[in-house]
Amino acid sequence: MMASASINLPPGFIFSPTDEELVFHFLYSKASLLPRHPNIIPDLDLSFLDPWELNGKALSSGNDYYFFTKVKEHRGTENGYWREIGVTYPIFSAIDKKVGIKKYLVFHVGESPQGTETSWVMQEYHICSFGSDTSCYQSTANRRQKHDQSWSNWVLCRVYENKSQNFYCHDDDSGSELSLLDEVYMCLDEDLEEISMPK
Image 1 (cartoon, one colour):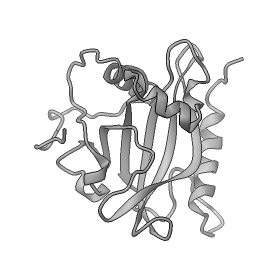
Image 2 (spheres, helix red, strand yellow):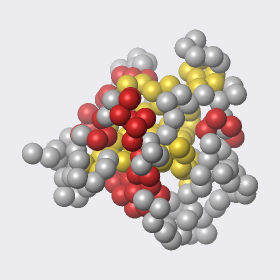
Image 3 (cartoon, rainbow, N blue to C red):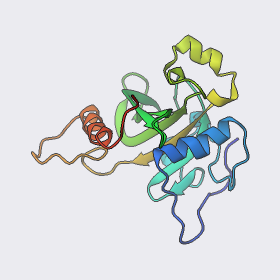
Image 4 (tube, rainbow, N blue to C red):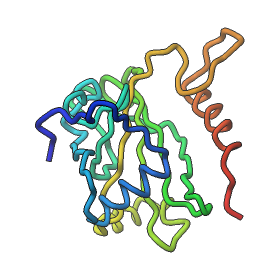
């Protein structure tokens, strides 16, 4: 069900959760049908929305838009499609347990696979089932089978438009332009240095 009104935070509040908080406190609650207080992140269907139409429909915080959506293999809209760029980032809890993964996608205008890349980026958060460190990386066939279980039906999305010349978090001092994929890998290298991997 799509949101029908703009979702805004009260004055003085900013929604700035960590990856762990997005997965553990919001996505797990959504997937397990636990009550969420307050229920501020709406459910949207990506098939009916291009990224520039999220304003007034998704939870807006700064330049970021947050929403839940059902898991889909193909993420097309009327004017384009979201394309995965092949980067999967693990998300760990404070006790070094993997609780989810984050995928990066970029919106392309036109028909797949010849669409034109835009500056719209989506981070798609998936949860892992309890008691399994490998369930996030199931095969396509297994994923389809698992979609019948509530914990795997939903993903949480964070969408933003990167208006700067460089994508993500890396500044190239040489003045040369890096590809989108290069920017992501360099950003992830910096992030991975700050987390401890499970033994």
